[in-house]
Amino acid sequence: MRTPPTTAPPTVDPDRPDLTPAARRVLETASRLFYERGIHAVGVDLIAAEAGVTKKTLYDRFGSKERIVVDYLATRDARWRAFLAAHHDPDELTPTERVLAVFDASQEWMAQHSSKGCSMVNAHAEISDPAHPAYAVIAGQKQWMLELFTRLAQDVSPDAARELGRSLMLLHEGALVSDGLDVFPDAFGRARRLAAFLLHAARETR
Image (cartoon, rainbow, N blue to C red; front, side, top):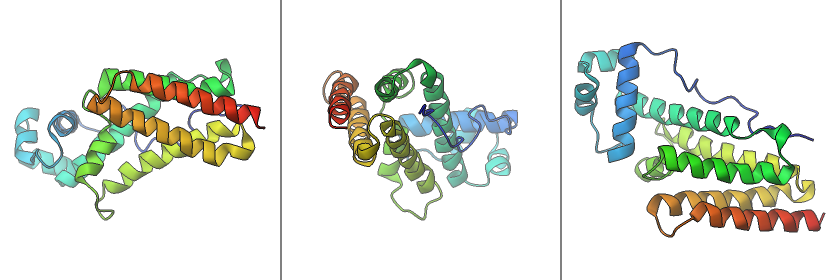
């Protein structure tokens, strides 16, 4: 059975055709500032000034800073899912290769888009209240990744898919944090090699 890298659509269209030019500038500016400086450290005055809009325009388009934070995280998640889908052709890969391709895509994504680490992990450090509207986006992105690994593991070892998916998720998230903090070199390479070992062991015990 061929398992595609995604089954559920992203939260939003990564290209955001729904936004006006001014709203797009606000979101792109806020996204850059939130990621570089932190969500709590960036206020609407700074966002409006750097986006070249008035605060009235900002509030007319988004209503609140919380809404901008939600859109920032949801859009980044959508772009990651689109990036993964573009780098993950299920028809060209074996079940094991499809799992390992997630690690490869994550490493490339981090190199291109995430010099300060995983945006969801960073956001959770500032937003840990489940009542915050952005919390569902953060938790939902991680749940989606766990479900992805579990689905892909199903093609490797159906009986062990649940536990294998969780183990792969642990390796992936550990690599994200280690890479973002530059704890040691080649975090994704190390995680990928361990993932390959787990996948080989799972196949051998089928």
